[in-house]
Image (cartoon, rainbow, N blue to C red):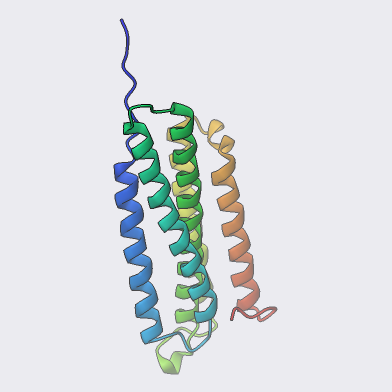
Length: 184
């Protein structure tokens, strides 16, 4: 009995990446209408524009993988390279969006209480911590399902790298909170 190999389903990833492009551009347009008075607009804009480039690349790479998979002389190795490249760029783009959201939410809450924010309170610092820990839990659950086991979940180098980068972002936010460094 022979099993026919199907080309990878990249159409959903193309749609998801396209939706993320629209979301990033919408967020950029909205935050520039009313930027946080405590700063962060420069950093968040930089992160979102980088994520935009990576999401566009994800669409392009997935489209190329789809084209290659459906061509008469499809090369499975080549298709898988494009799929892998698209997966890495999508993941990094999503990580940058998570950075931007953590910083943006924190900076909006950091606004002084007389201006409608929470000021420099522990609740302000809890937002990025809670946000990032929730993202990490979701990544761990995904890895556990994907790799069939909790210990096996630690094997995903790329997802572990994203968590390390997000933890670094959290360190920067905490340093900003204690005014060791300031996020521009």
